[in-house]
Amino acid sequence: MAMRCGHRPVILLLVVFVVVVSSPFSTALGVNWGGASSQPLPAPKVVTGLLRPNGVVRVKLADADPAALASLVGSGIGVAVGIPNQMLRDLGASKKAAASWVHDNVTRYLSDRGPGARLGIEYVAVGDEPFLLSYGKEFEPYVVGAATNIRLALTAAKADRIKVIVPCSFDVIQTESNLPSKSHFRPDLNKTMTDLLSFLANYSSPFVIDVNPFSALQQNKNLSLDYLLFQKKSRPITDGNSSYNNFFDLSIDSLISSLSKVGFGEMEVVVGRIGWPTDGAVNATPSVAQTFNKALIDHLKTKSGTPLRPKRFPTETYLFSLLDEDRRSITAGNYERHWGIFTFDGQAKYNVDLGQGSKSLESAHNVEYLYPRWCVVNNNNDKDLSNVTAGASEACSNADCTALSPGSSCFGIGWPANVSYAFNSYYQQRDQSQESCDFGGLGLITTVDPSLGDCRFAIALRTSFSTSIHETLIATRMMILSAFVWLYLLSFS
Ligand SMILES: *[C@@H]1O[C@H](CO)[C@@H](O)[C@H](O)[C@H]1NC(C)=O
Ligand SMILES: *[C@@H]1O[C@H](CO)[C@@H](O)[C@H](O)[C@H]1NC(C)=O
Ligand SMILES: *[C@@H]1O[C@H](CO)[C@@H](O)[C@H](O)[C@H]1NC(C)=O
Ligand SMILES: *[C@@H]1O[C@H](CO)[C@@H](O)[C@H](O)[C@H]1NC(C)=O
Ligand SMILES: *[C@@H]1O[C@H](CO)[C@@H](O)[C@H](O)[C@H]1NC(C)=O
Ligand SMILES: *[C@@H]1O[C@H](CO)[C@@H](O)[C@H](O)[C@H]1NC(C)=O
Ligand SMILES: *[C@@H]1O[C@H](CO)[C@@H](O)[C@H](O)[C@H]1NC(C)=O
Image (cartoon, rainbow, N blue to C red):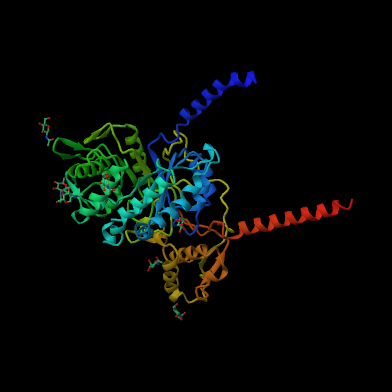
């Protein structure tokens, strides 16, 4: 008894020490983890094989994927849970719907299985760029209502510390000659933006903005690649007394200037998304992406802040993105499916410090693939290949051919290798089913890897809904059965 009492202060000290040392989410860098993939890397592998070994302390999820959330429980990683735009209307219309969303997708992960078992949800992100110009008024009327209802539901669920945010696309801001002083919120958003800012201020939530230097380059906004990549040799942009050496500071101050003009100049800012793609367009390569991300992270580490907010960078910055996602919409461009710092199967494309320090990025180990089999064009002389293009476009309309576009990794492979690429993409997306490599008799299954140079012919992952879970279930049933048989036999001995 005496011994126990004597140890108490020590234990208390230890507890305090642990809490301070692992001071959960002290780093300002996070990553986006989305699930728009035909071959999602299993969530436990993402958490234990990528996020943790690479020192990632924060993730932002596109939705409330139960597998991702379950894997993050107890990981010590801070989480932003997303609500897709399609749900905003219902959540805005009904407090009950919001309460049930919070109950199903938040509260159950916060249960009292001890503080170590809790999920570190920091934010609920209501919508995903709902004010994007190309959406028109599709989601705008429901955003603030949905955010308010989610806020009320979180408070009722005693989850006050979780902040409600609304990630905004950069086109909520209009600017002239790229100058922060001439930036302001889009006039058509006026009432909605006024309500949103008042809501965010009422609950001390940050304004979340997505910054997209690559699309600025695509849209030819008179900004040089060097300027977007933080290169010292690029010419600064001068705005009054301020001089901007890079696109990041320029973008942040355009937002701060816009906020100031409507009376919210002190609002915290978070960058919800920023990154550089590695394929699907000119200047989208692993090497340029590495230059961008490395320069961005180094810049953030200086803690210099921006001209309008010296020594004060956005509270957090979420890189876009962790993994490639082949189901992302390519309306903006083929590069949309190649934002990953890692390939779809968790292999690092380049090196950058996500929190692991000077070590190289660790790729996912023991990834389970289907068989080493590919689908290619049957190139026998007796085949009439004149019709093979129809097969390719059929494959491409379902699968992912973005790496074949000009400037991409498979652009130069020629014909009919490019058709084989299309066939294979479709075949792998269909979990290598035999009939998916038919193409009117023009497809051929091969065990020889057709990859050429940088052009990788991928093999599908053995995902949860294919064989592995099924096999595990069968194995478990067999074990239980044999245990019963043993017990039965033993009862006679
Ligand atoms: C979250 O909760 C809602 C409401 O109960 C439910 O319809 C939805 O499927 C849940 N999961 C996700 C991923 O949003
Ligand atoms: C909306 O318009 C009013 C009146 O012109 C203005 O005072 C206010 O700042 C505007 N709000 C935003 C967010 O632009
Ligand atoms: C913010 O708080 C003020 C004062 O309590 C209130 O009048 C206003 O409606 C709130 N705004 C929102 C959007 O909740
Ligand atoms: C483009 O940038 C150059 C150099 O910064 C500047 O002189 C020129 O006026 C700009 N053009 C436009 C259309 O903004
Ligand atoms: C620029 O700096 C000068 C001197 O510090 C100051 O008087 C002036 O108001 C500033 N101008 C702007 C646009 O901030
Ligand atoms: C060519 O493809 C079309 C569409 O898939 C198909 O209807 C047609 O029969 C094919 N022609 C030949 C000669 O294979
Ligand atoms: C393959 O290359 C040929 C010749 O360059 C081209 O006509 C065809 O459209 C390409 N097909 C695909 C699927 O990229």
